[in-house]
Image 1: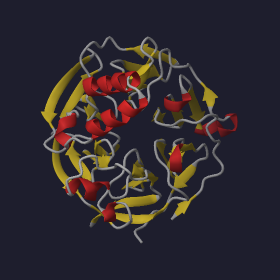
Image 2: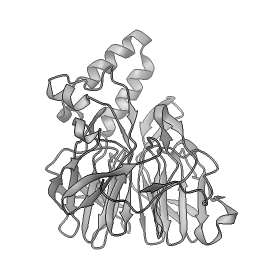
Image 3: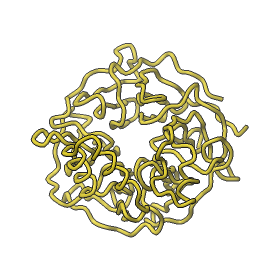
Image 4: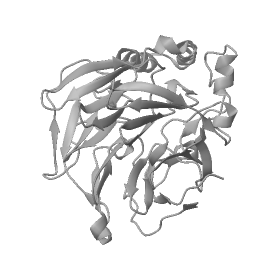
Amino acid sequence: MMKVETMLPALPVAVVSGACGQSGQRLFAGLGSAGQAWFGLDLANTAAGWVALAPFPAEAPQQPAYVTLQDRIFVLGGSVLDQRSACMRQSTRIWAYDMQQDVWHCMPFEQHSDFLGAVAFADPQRGLMVAGGYHRGQFDDFCIRMNSLAQEEKERFRSDYMAREIAGFHWNQGLRRFDTRTACLDLVTENPLLATCGSALLQQDGLAWLISGEVKPGLRRNGIVRLDTARCEVTATEAVTGGQVFGGGDGVASPFAGILQQTPVFAGGTYFPGAAKNYQAGSLFAHQGLEKRWSDECFVRTGEGWQLAGKLPAGRAHGCSFVLPEGILLTGGDSQDGVPVLENWLLSDMSVN
């Protein structure tokens, strides 16, 4: 069952493709479409609403990787507007927000990185782990080229760029560890499966799941990658059954996800109906001419795998997920055609139909 939460205050501004974190009763969200704005909500004092906290001290990233580790929220990379060239580019910075001091710190990180669209998760033994991510050189070059071309040239360049096989995009295949003490990034192991951008991530009992995500622009993975976090290795892929999206061969990007009553859950996300079939038929620009859709479907992981368990009031993606005692809180993000959503929804009592 899905119910709409009306008691918790809505975000004061749209937060789409931003970052978030949680520490006990305190929730944090911002960046992305909210720019440098960063907000906190104390669940013990919801009457105060989302309070403006220390603003992000640099160009605010879109679609960064982020993770809560002890008393800090780490924000890695993302895309930012280069003021000199007026083009989007990948940020190479890693920031840490101190929840106790309400202050941002820029980590002394100087290595090559491909964090845009990646996911990060906390590992008890290794610290901060990162999976996936868009190739920085390709992304930056694409944005510069698109900005310099006339309109008719842009369409041709974009078509040539998109009409390539998955391997041609060179998304980050490694599982990497960021040492928060030394600010060094190390490759721990290679992911033997296709790298993704825009996956959601779930963790439970030494396991992590990379939920769907893109394997190239416009083309989603129809399935879930399971990781053993203790051994830091991919152990399996898990199918998703039922519903219109996965049943049609497609997957989703940027869904919501969380653990509800010990059960992994994900919901929403965006997709292009028919993109997977197009790619399998040899059409490498798989989403050309297809309408982007926002999914309203919710899935749970049972003993029989991932199965459809219900629907959201409407399609939704690119937002923040928080695990509360009452359920999984969905806040921020957008709906069909990129329309921002401020209201909160609460996933609770999910069961397979």
